[in-house]
Image (cartoon, rainbow, N blue to C red; front, side):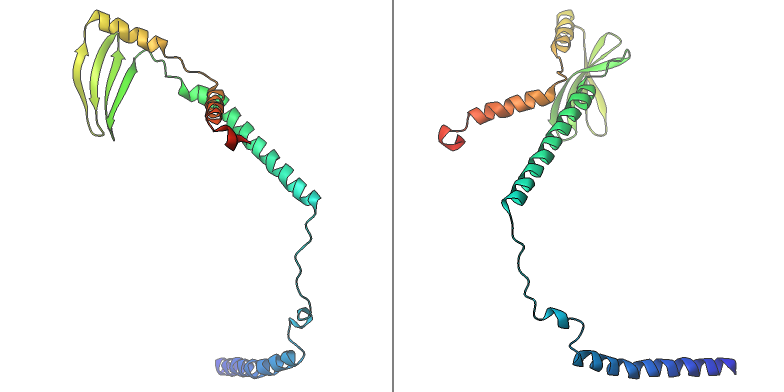
Length: 173
């Protein structure tokens, strides 16, 4: 019996709320609604001063300088570390010739032997072993001639300045 009275009380409360809400809405509409204070105000754009424009441009250049500085530091410290070939005693890749997506020919030195390998995504095949002493010496010299610069960012900026010199003079002004 307690459940019945509880259900009837909830139903009566919902009925009261449903009937009272339209009356409250009508009263609010008669007073002008919740946006009534904004009807006479016409929004105007904010006045922009030269100081705010200058501050915006200065902040833009500061952020740009920060990004260039971080790129320089990343290239300086990370580029030099990851660009160097790994020196191991077990073996090393002397040269690599990409032939297409996932296919290449590599020359690898393992324990003093030079091996020419065909490499695909699923298979590595020994093409031949290089036994010619002159060719082996040439491969060793070629590998020692390759040097990686730790200052890759400076090289990139140098190439960009060289590109800037190729722009016709009437466009540089």
